[in-house]
Length: 103
Length: 85
Image 1 (spheres, helix red, strand yellow):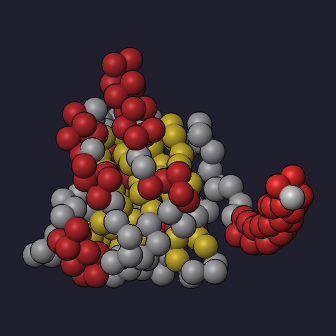
Image 2: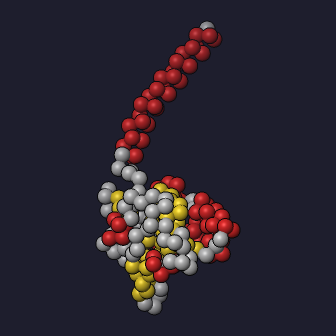
Image 3: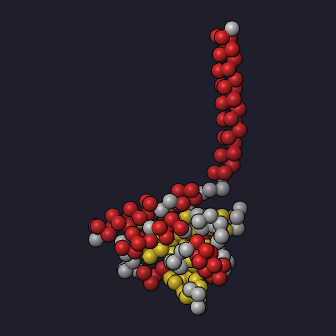
């Protein structure tokens, strides 16, 4: 999440809203956001319905996997990063900026 | 003498390499096993959702569809709060 915070200005400049999602409670997520200095919303998927809907529920942890989706203005998925690859969001930032230039 | 000891060392290294390979492979295979590719692929329409977050004063709802036509959305799933960054 901190890596997204570091790139937040670039992402916002490219018309992109960042949303974190986990299966923690909204209050735990708020405390986590404050602790690590994240200013974008960390959404609570309490119960995991959305996590399962997106196919990123990991049974072993009873939680979400680390997966990033970049969703375009048309609602279609533009980029995907899974597990270790998802720690560094540079690929998504570059994709956003490329898209911004195109449009 | 020298030649012989070198031979022993390289033999030992080879053995070590074989042992490491045989140890690391099953571990890797085990790690990868539960990791299936995500259900949704690039180009698919992302399913809509409505989730809440706490902004410090109250609970706010956010849906994917509210950004349709105006903004891209990065949806970053993470395992647990207070782990990693």
